[in-house]
Length: 127
Image (cartoon, rainbow, N blue to C red; front, side, top):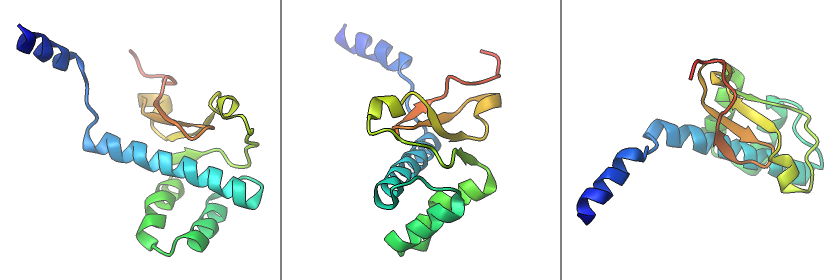
């Protein structure tokens, strides 16, 4: 009986695909980098070039930088630049700092101002 119950619970659970995990990790790292930039520079980045300069100063690994910057430059990920971050993390979580470009049409993941990644609730796609 316990095995059947566990099996039925597993059917209702949806696990992330490797692609989902990678997408969420990238957004999360961008959020943490955005916040680190803000702490060190005492302002938020103005654009992808600003963030690139910061990453190059902090990290000499070109692949790690490309992992974050290439999707910004291609438009795959949209970040909001020149945001005023609050010291209150809860206040920052009330706004979207970035999102995957497909979010408005097909859904995907958002990055909150508090650097948390969440499944988008913003979509024009039929539910």
